[in-house]
Image (tube, helix red, strand yellow):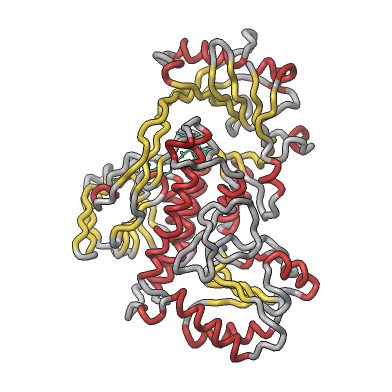
Length: 537
Ligand SMILES: Cc1cc2nc3c(=O)[nH]c(=O)nc-3n(C[C@H](O)[C@H](O)[C@H](O)COP(=O)(O)OP(=O)(O)OC[C@H]3O[C@@H](n4cnc5c(N)ncnc54)[C@H](O)[C@@H]3O)c2cc1C
């Protein structure tokens, strides 16, 4: 085990594993410790949103996720019928029982708008039991030191000096390390954030639920009416049934008050009530109790400690946002940490992790609470938003965005138009898409080739990684329209795909104009004057 790493990650759930992966891809070494011996055997989070898939696609994981899960397709997509092993229609039915699907089912949700947003990947339906091993392998492949059966047993932070004690549960050895940063991704029951005296707020427990995993051949009852989720209401069952990533494998979720003692007989009886056809054989696969809770960290940073995932924000699973918000946390912090560790940005860039991510997680949690029936008055008057906004239309306003608009984090209407603080539009630039160009440094897109020279000069002078991408003349009009740059302007995109700055310029602008404004912008983002004296890696 390498203890001389700049970053220690506590927790090897989906969020900690993705943090290790994203950091490694940014060239930052990390040590991840996970108390458990294996990744989660429970499917729990299944919905991997389009935005999360953009991050995993960038990391080269789409083929593995596609093989392990289902691509989520529109309800009417013929692939939902022709390729049932690989696709799942994004439809939510309201129905009395599965047996009633062909008689009285109401369509509650089709997600058609989300699926119509231009983007490189569809969302996937891939349970945590399948996704976590993929993330674990990818993090190790990328160079992270991932240690299961290792536990953080003590963390001491004094004057920004970290002393962490890690106990190997199998080896019985306890080792000490002094990382520069600690990421607490230790989940809803984690104690690391509290140890750093980060305060928490929230409404507490909203509901206590039970998930029953079962096997049953429902093909005859469902036929072509395959679904993402069925909300079932009848005299004996009130809850949801959803498909898992295996033929004939399902999960039913109900309130604990309805489930009662959760004995195998009781669970099978409940599942039978949801199915509504006594002739169907049901085999129990597992039961787990969980609480829909609302618990939010009031700060995402305490000196060298950063919190993310369920360690920072716990909310009901309605909408399927829990781990997805955590993936965005990890992606947001990874490039910033890399910039500071490599020495091209000042420490203050790390403060923008809290400024950007906490409002998004807070607003997302409110949406899940509204979906769970919590009245708007208890949420400061929050109202339901278009799911596309929650998934990828949120906005950042911080020192790492120049010219951000004030209505953050959720705008009134969905739109990705190149506004600073929003995700760059997915648009073709000739041969590839804007999304394919993202990576370690900033990317400057422009239909005007003169920006290439400017960017190269500024990069050399400031030692801030910025790559200029010329938009091919055939794609220039569509690009300028989608990103709002005009023919001679430019858009500067951060490594996480968010627009840092946009310039609308005239043809007559001089090289000096371009040079001065790009220099000013990059100096600000990289906080060049506050840069630490020596890089640590
Ligand atoms: C029924 C259900 C359905 C859900 N559906 C969805 C969905 O569709 N989409 C979605 O996005 N989310 C969903 N969620 C939420 C999702 O499961 C969580 O948001 C997600 O697991 C959080 O991941 P995490 O890595 O932050 O935390 P966790 O998965 O809780 O991982 C934290 C890890 O830290 C480890 N740990 C704790 N302390 C230490 C220590 N001291 N040392 C070492 N290791 C430690 C723990 O062992 C644990 O493995 C659902 C949740 C439930 C219960």
